[in-house]
Length: 313
Image (cartoon, rainbow, N blue to C red; front, top):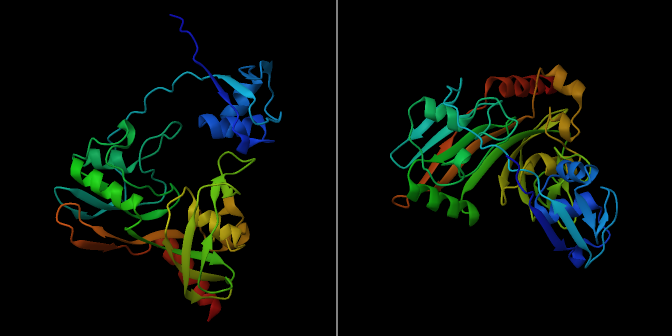
């Protein structure tokens, strides 16, 4: 059975004057830059009635028309045990887990690996039904390549209250990151907006006009080749710590996506970024008491840390 394609037509805001078509589509319609380029290449984008290529430039007030892609198939939650996922707290309102590396918070298009949601379902946990179908109960996330503490809501009240705490930035999220070199100053704040990378769709970057992003860091221990930092997030953008450390020219050790030295990662036998969510504190959604949780470094990160420490002695 055929369906009539959905056509959307919007005027280009003055703030996007001079932007490429693919960038304007991404900002106006929420596509990724890759998807926007695909639509333009397929002849599904017009600018003031004329076919538009991905690199054409837009001007304020022009009409940008796009044939919307068909909706993606719904993502299904698969109940699958997650090896190494530790439950550090469990009550009738929420569960706090230590997410291992290589595990996503929830299902998403293109991801076929294990998820925190699937692991909890396999273990018999009933979580909140609030949120999108594929991410019910998820109030915050960690990258697949980042390990550490996550809280998942089990009750609807917990979901609402925890989401509000994250929005109001009252949650204490602490990470430890082993970064290359020695930041100067040794303690400081990175206040730099983040948005999608202008040319690499899978990456994020410090971009003028991006979303406000603030990262505070303090030196824990300095080594010959690297520094161990305690990091507190004021905002929670995708890849925020990795992007901000890279912008300082001190990327997380092992983070090849954001410019880390591959020879150092190989020497430390590290197959991912050295980044771990070590502490998580918030007001319990039921009675308001402050609760805090901590997590030790996983084996691969501890080995890398021990190695750089030994090399510095």
